[in-house]
Image 1: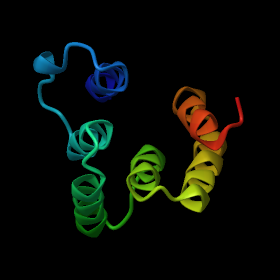
Image 2: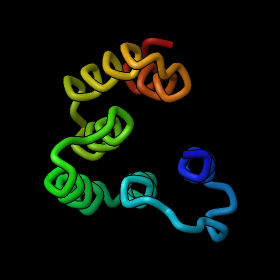
Image 3: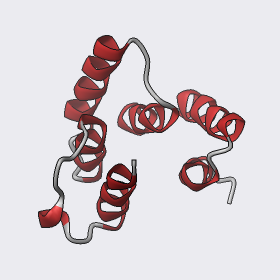
Length: 99
């Protein structure tokens, strides 16, 4: 879990990207989004959803970003809050203009 959070922070801030190790498919998709490859990221996340049956709330955030889907971002935001995940819910607030 810590490694995924560290990967997220590196990608979000575009720092030390060359040091990303053992990166989860969802974080690779997030990196693709940050690089402007949203369609590729969307395909990766849809594949992940098919393999796992569902996406986690933060993975849903990434899918919402890839699709520019405000409704999906709102749903992810609610799920993050329901889960008590204040850290990642800050990102949804930024994208929804709530902060």
